[in-house]
Image 1 (cartoon, one colour):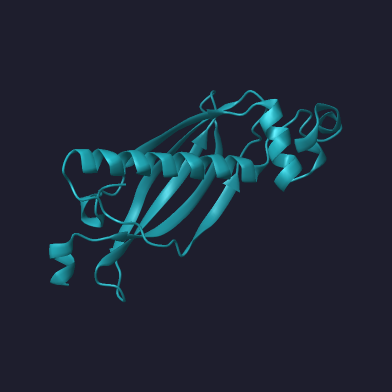
Image 2 (cartoon, rainbow, N blue to C red):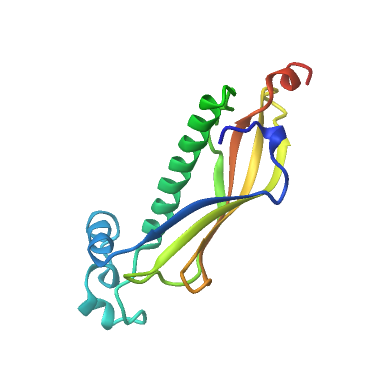
Length: 164
């Protein structure tokens, strides 16, 4: 994101884009990172409670991260092109409440977005604050499939941080 902590409003939404999960991609991810039977083949998935090949939850989370990074990069470049100084991101002290709410099946298209839930100035790093976000993935039927709450350090406006 190119905006500083002070520029964000609680409730502000940022759409990250969407991704369609293909059979080959689901299997390739599972072979490398989550080799459970219902992620590896249609035949094995049919024997489980899922009944169909479905993506690993870690796969859905990885796609979220890919789209988030691409969106931040785009916004960063837009800020530079407009002659603005983009804010820097710091580390994330973690996330909570990760939920895989519904399976993501082969052929499903998941749209991802993030909503600013809270923001706070850092008590130990005056030039930085924490931004909290509710992150969502929704399938093509409008059904929620993915959720987590994140927090990340975000730079404050330099003139404001200097007087903190």
